[in-house]
Amino acid sequence: MKIYNTLTRTKDEFVTNVPGKLSMYTCGPTVYHYAHIGNLRSYIMEDVLEKYFRFSGYNVTRVMNITDVGHLTSDGDTGDDKMLKGAKREHKTVMEIAKFYTDAFFDDCKKLNIKRPDVVEPATGCIDEFIKVISSLIEKGFAYEAGGNIYFDTSKLKQYYVFNDFKEEDLAVGVREGVEEDSNKKNKADFVLWFTKSKFEDQELKWDSPWGIGYPGWHIECSCISMKNLGEYLDIHCGGIDNAFPHHTNEIAQSEAYLGHKWCNYWFHVHHLNTNSGKMSKSAGEFLTVSLLEEKGYDPLVYRFFCLLSHYRKSLVFSYENLDNAAVSFNKLIAKTASAIKDDSGEIDTAAYDKLMESFKAALDNDLNTALAITALYDVLRENTNGRTKKALIAEFDKVLSLDIIAKAEKLNAAENTTDEIPAEIAELVEQRKAARKEKNFALADELRDKITSMGYIVEETRQGTKITKQN
Ligand code: AMP
Ligand code: ZN
Figure (tube, rainbow, N blue to C red):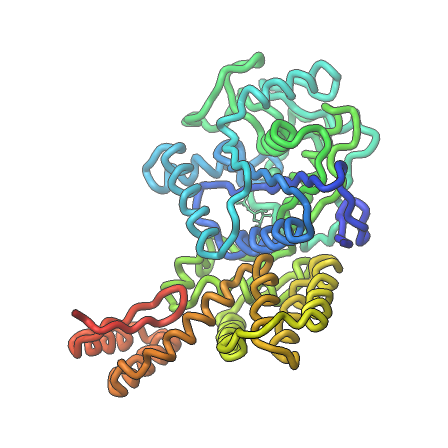
């Protein structure tokens, strides 16, 4: 498999440190609010990567942190504390906010068929680990105390700016408003490992440390949580492109200074989901969440499909029009699969199976080209072979794509057999309701639902589509 490596800026052959075993680290969410669908684009593409590694035979261990302390509103170490901001907004404690939004994040992941990583570790559970590594960095001369905080000294490194040659506009997304210069720093690029002089007087979460009561910086979390669970040699590290600098650059700096050798071999970065007006945001414009898409009548897996249609290294524009187009294609894909597998008797046609499997693998082996993998799926449906072979191939592909294709197609086939029981009059009202929802005329949709209910039928939106049942 070849994968684009941000470290070398080329598509590299993927080779793990230990044959057959693969260690994978993912920057987890900052749990101060719901994830927007842009955040989830990164997690969907990383999920495909993880599943394709497993599909290719690797024994994968994937670790993710949960940032419940230390992430300020700039990706450096300036601005407000995101968690504190969230707690104030909702009149709750930081830990209540963290618990609520961690659960919400995994609920969204479930709806999008994103597998939970093998290890999920909140930063607040690893304070001893941070103190151990920071103490060692001070001892080795890579960190210093100034104005009550502990800083990493970037001038002590042979090379610091590993990931800083991105286009300005890519990096600008990660840099937020209100950045003020910290006069304690010896060098502009130095960053905080441990805060004791908090500018937030009401900072709730603080721990004792050799340097006084305080809390960790954001970057140290990921280095420590990764090294704690995956050891000194990491195969691949993932995140959204805005994490490349300064977050990942700082992770490399502190991890390699601590270890005294190279830490991670491959860096996988997913480019941004944008709106027509630019950056996706939790505070400005429509806050696009999975729940919002569901409220508007979209199956979350349509969003997953929409993401898979584009390469992860290209920025992607979200609009309802684009999502509607994806929904139409997705429904057609399910309908075609349903008719292809209706008769799945007979033997596997091994020649066709091997050829089609090869083209699926070739697509993903080439820097995770999911769009071409979907094309390979259409090729299966077009192939002149039996339903058994098609079903077997699609089921295998879906171990990576996770679109529930076979289950949805079978449901469609089963529903077709029972449609006779739904009177035409009801079916017509259901169609009218679907059209109303699509036009976002929710008042009319509700009115039609009430009418259907009054006629003795229940209409519901489920993950598999519209479900109609007769009331008892
Ligand atoms: P955060 O919760 O802000 O720490 O971000 C969680 C993940 O989402 C990180 O990997 C970010 O790099 C990624 N991310 C943030 N914004 C976007 C976006 N618009 N599109 C894709 N990924 C994003
Ligand atoms: Zn991280």
